[in-house]
Structure formats: structure tokens, C-alpha cells
Length: 90
Image 1 (cartoon, one colour):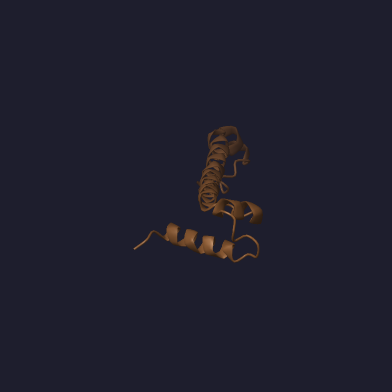
Image 2 (cartoon, rainbow, N blue to C red; image 1 turned 90 degrees about the horizontal axis):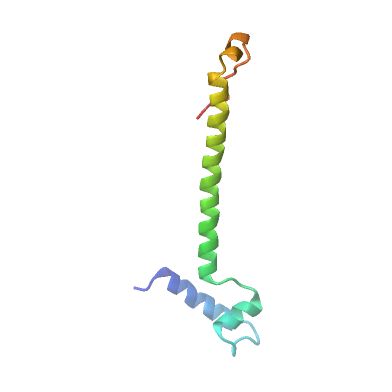
């Protein structure tokens, strides 16, 4: 059984050969002429997008945590009734 990436490459190679006038070019040249990214580039790009999502998620949680710390330790705000901890869900 072959690896799924190899199967996708085979399909992409065959599909690019079907474009009129590109059959005689190499795979890389066909991709360039059609302005298609390589599978390796697409995998790396997808990984980078996922890493950004994770980092952005934790950054938002961390920002919320630090803003809540200010409210929790400001005892003068508690006395004045200003300290609203309802937004501090970590």
C-alpha cells in the first residue's frame, strides 16, 4: 500500500498533464506555469496556520489572565465596588 501523499502526487501529476500544451514540460515546470504550490509547500503552510491558531488562542487566554490579576489584587477597587471579576474566566 502506498502512502496517501504519494497517491495525491500521482493524481496531481496526471491532472497537470491534462492541461493542453503542458504535457511536454516537467512536473515542476507545469506547477510553475499553472501557479500551483507543491504539496510540501501546502503542508508547511497548513502547519504554520495551525501553529498560529494555537499561539493566538493561548495569547488571548494569557492576556485575559494578566488583566484579571490586576483586578484581583487591587483591593482598593474591591472596596470601591469597581473590581468586576465576572470577566475573569481563565
